[in-house]
Length: 304
Image (cartoon, rainbow, N blue to C red; front, side, top):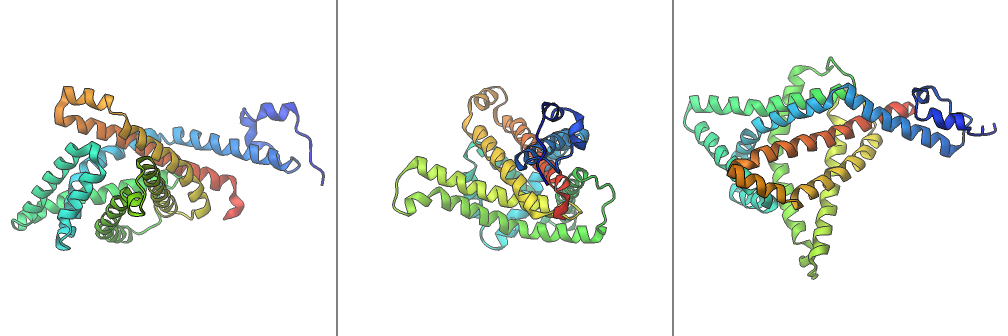
């Protein structure tokens, strides 16, 4: 079988809707990869717009804002039982130096929820209602991921989903503690091996952070949707979205001019709109990665 030559007409069709029916069986390997690449890119951005993922990311941002204090309270409640609450607080303040006001507010309000839970049955019921916002956030996150794959009716039983969320909720404090210690460790990794180079230390830190982000996102793209997802596609999408996510975090942490202007106007509460902006764009990056996973798997259906 001989390769067919690529014509100028074929090149023009790359930028039209005819690309979806374009035959590549007799084209060169480079041409087939180019066609697949453009299809994947178009499908990622087109389906993101068609599913109105931007609005859903905004909704998730507000759900996280509602759930952040109860989640912090639960994490500190569990870590307090392990006598690690004080160390965890120090670690959070250390790894989030540009969000000290928000961290202090969250910790303070979390202490109020814990105190209410210990006050009696009424306080415990109130604390449980706050905790329900965290579980509801998990339900909504799964729903958005399923929307990426066009799943409207989730095949998983409700009680299984609820049990999975509760199990994840109890594991989350340990995950946070491990990651917090890991971040604190890599912050001093270079000095621990006998080197004293600030730029090298920061580079190693961001490299390890990127590895953690890629692992976390690939697991989310693989296991959250209620369908079979090829891990290789999830990993490729996580490599791209993880790089953009880390770049966004770097720009957010390093750009302080806008933060100072907001602090001058709003004071302490300036942390709240900044947090919402950060959440919204972070979720958009994550969901673009989920759309890329879908586009990759749809393009290479033979992998299933």
